Image (tube, rainbow, N blue to C red):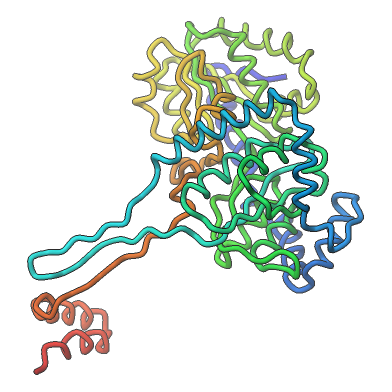
Length: 431
């Protein structure tokens, strides 16, 4: 079960943090080797390779005509969704769209007195491939969180890949695709789907950028195709850190830790608290609530391997640990959450107070739930509209402006040993 790391156990704290860091796909050379072979096979053999990997990994025999999910199949599956789920999906889409509409960037251009025109042109990426996980659980929320910002950005072609069977077996995923008007859907999962999107096959045209979460094979594949296409991030296992003091409710904390742990056996759920009483109550609550959780074995394995309750002297010390972990999700359950947040530099998303569990961000609030994991919140951000656009610099110098700048440009070029660059500036001074 989840372990309590005492305040005095600095070595235990460091060992636990090292264990969390070891989950990164970037350090697994064996995994990268396996995935690299799959990518090269799909790149060279196309659809045939996709069908073989589908048979091997998904245990489904498909033909080439089955790779693309027909509109009829999408609509038939979507028609089976429960009305309550459909209404919730529509509300989620509205909230997510409203939030992302505020992320729109505008092109701009300025002109100086000597007629130098400088600016930036914002254009959407033309084609994007969105990966929607399947497997042990299928996520309609991933459809919403990936498709909506791409649509707001103005992406003209959105292709979705998801493991075979996901659309037929999960009406909520199909309903999300139908509600969002996405018709280019392919029944391909895993590393082979990422390879198909990156390089194209006879059935799946290549895209310019790939986004969306997936398992470790998907994450490794995205890492390896980056450069041939753009990617959003190399997502690792999901994680939450909760900072709580003596005012925090143990039953809320336990529920939130278990909500994270049920994602997968490699998910991480951590409580950092100043209260030993709260820590012990949370352990008791976890045991009580765990017995009624359908994914009990998964959650228990997650907490055993990557769960912990870390006792600290102060909320300030808790903030220092948070900044070191740079978690995907951070929940604040302290007497002054605003003050606590002031000490946080690195987190994918911050949830304030007892009535803002991670689940509200996963499904409903509006901000994107595709977040940086594995300490990458130190340098990256949530998926957004800005991930689906390009920024083109605009530069226009007048004759007067070039005349004033040419000699300085030439000086810098000569300092770098690039005489041709200097000449291209100076030639514009000749009569």
